[in-house]
Image (cartoon, rainbow, N blue to C red):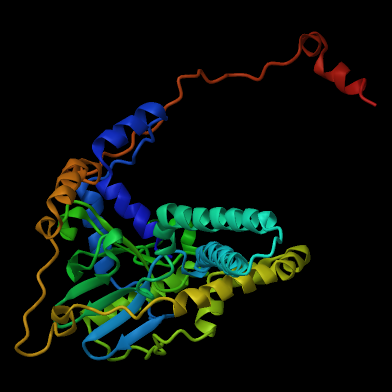
Length: 398
């Protein structure tokens, strides 16, 4: 669930030495140059109405005159696979250790009342299960636990909170994904503001919000996905327009969204498996639909892991200053800056700042391609056709 956010954060704090070594070993990927005019154009587009039918598909956890709180994060529908693999490793280790304890109990009783019975096989089995059980547990704790934390033993959801009174946006996420961040509302851009900013037409992807480095405050952009995966660009527009109107104009006139509970109900685990797939079901051929039916047990397995993941996590809790933000007499949370991170992280963010910085000025216009190839003035015919008169050639045709 937090895998994409973790990878994004690693890209922001990746040591320059490792990045340079990777680019030397592999072919360097050419990055698309960004200009200040691109950011300004996206910001201006985000201020304009996107559609006349604002609607939030959720999940929405809080909605009132001041606050709109939603779920964010990429691949929420895939949550559950890591949980199943993690629980398999944990259960396998515990079962092996339980067998070892039974064997030790047997050998201890045998030692107290030994009458010459053979015990070599029992001792060998105890050694084998002890090695596999503790070995698997050690490997899991050393290499697998960090991935388990993406879905288990952590906050149940990534949250984004929009505060109309303070005109701020708050992101709730674990420290290894960048931590809790306070951003300005007026610096946001969105894939729902215009079709040219939507990835792949907005199909099967949630609404994405972007804060350029000049507004994010920590020398890198903030790039997040909000809500459910969409089936078409119209759903992206409706979701974005709902958020924009709430922050700029207020909740008056907006359709009230259904409120989702933080309690891990089973349907909250199984319904995300089908987010953004409606257009596939509608347009799929008969063979494709039969294939989807055949792989439906896989959705059931992942949904079960999703539910286990929800139950083994806890409800996220905001810091007190964010919970009270906008109330009379309460302080306004400061925007997140580079100084809010540890010194080692600050140094890496400074080193990598050039990767996200926009070039000054306006993007140059593309030059029209002109062909250097000479145009043919006449169509060449075969030598045989040149020697035969047109009338005779027509007459000879069958």
